[in-house]
Image (tube, rainbow, N blue to C red; front, top):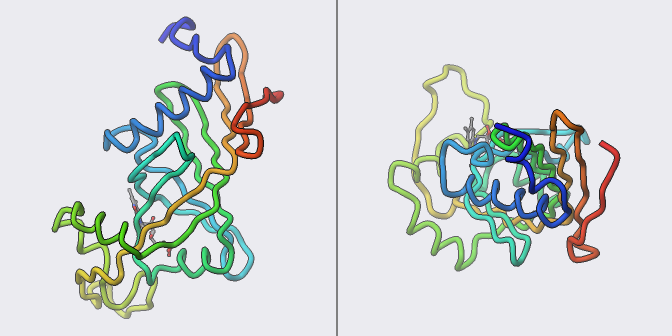
Length: 190
Ligand SMILES: Cc1cc2nc3c(=O)[nH]c(=O)nc-3n(C[C@H](O)[C@H](O)[C@H](O)COP(=O)(O)O)c2cc1C
């Protein structure tokens, strides 16, 4: 890819636009980098916890992202204790690191019921196994997969800030966009 392919990185607006393009692509294309962000939370013992998740929706207008999980997974207990979390993506295609600070609301209301209708039956087995995710078992097969709509939970992420780092041969570029000032953005030293 030539330097001109990264023209978007010369303005704050272009930079911000590109990040949301990456996120939208992650939702639409299962091979895109942003399909699988790393979600970091504060663990119940105070340490950092990180795991891969699937990005299910990205709404730029409201600065919202959506993830799906099992209600009985450890991350939900962590988010109830501390809703502040981070999402991390490295999009090699545009050589951009996206760091999102988010507040996460664990949701099981009407929107979750609506989303459940769109979850393919083969994927519904990810919600409802016994024992719950992370439970100790004696053998790897001591586990019964099950599907339980009551265990299906949305993680609704409100983006508080978005920090972008673009690696380019003619100089790296870094910028921070914060909800507090309407995501106007500031350049940072890379
Ligand atoms: C490619 C990939 C995609 C995953 N997607 C999800 C997901 O969308 N939601 C989820 O809860 N776990 C997902 N997982 C499993 C998590 O990484 C994690 O192992 C699991 O949720 C338990 O995490 P916890 O104990 O911290 O709650 C995925 C794992 C991989 C490897």
